[in-house]
Length: 449
Image (cartoon, rainbow, N blue to C red; front, side, top):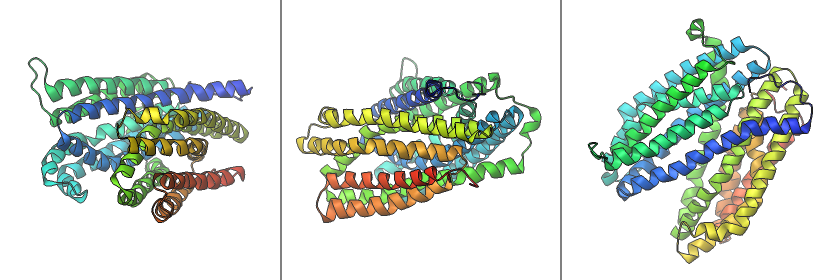
């Protein structure tokens, strides 16, 4: 979709635009998660120490990802807004400035990984047996952080132009290559020796490199973005704008991570079976997030483009329809969770007590799905309106107070266990949905309104 959406003429046309953007993003997320499971499966064949090494590394990388994803959000918004305003030159300029910023961020985090890999892992409480393996794996995958940051930003530039198919294609290609390289480099193949855990790390790096090359090739061919030599000169205002919008978006994701640490300890205190059930239920629920994030991506891009056209009513139409479609799709997923929870749980464990707890969690989660759709998609809408601060504040209150206190009061104090935990999660999402919705209905979701 090269831009000009024009004035929406019918609901069916609006639905088409949204689905064209949302479904590739959903498929991309789906493939990343499925292939991530396969990746973990290969590493698990090496042993529990190796699995732990990858797990603790990914926990630290989640912070890196939060920063790079936030930069991607800011890039998407500004590119979409300028494309909507018909300012392709400005969209190209901000895209190239975002690439410069992503290179600086990638190099910075790469240097942190080079010099502080071991201290960072020790902060995570890594056992001595795991530390050496984790340090090796972490350094290989994190020193070239520039590849991670570039993948996020290049994908976001293309999404800002309305092209979500290209990032989907490149992501699927890179992930499939990762699985192939995993098998070859971990276990060896013909004349190629086995590199074990280091092989898994190098497979990840090489697949990211191919991803960056693929996205770059597509971007240079894009009709919406024109790469110009003069745009490589650092523009202070563009850099500040990207950081101004990206910082709260990064803050929101970090707030979530810190909040998880707060209440995870309480769940562990309830019991190992309950914690295991909670983790498995969370791994199953992640598929619903793919749907929500897909429609949120579409909403951010389309709302940003319409606001760039100064078409506020058009932006609201796309925003409203994105929410309606997201609620429908995620409610259908909720119905599947409700009725198929026991069956799905059986793939993860044979322990009947844990299976029962997983099924109960998923039944409660089924009712959370429409509310979660509102939270995820409204956050994307706010981002399209260049408002990333309010979602961050609401997330902090929701997860640090409502969810954490709820887990303690309902799960531990009242003794409701897994049911109390997931009711607390539902109350947190309900609180955030109501706050985001009230401000949206009062037309205060766009910055400076």
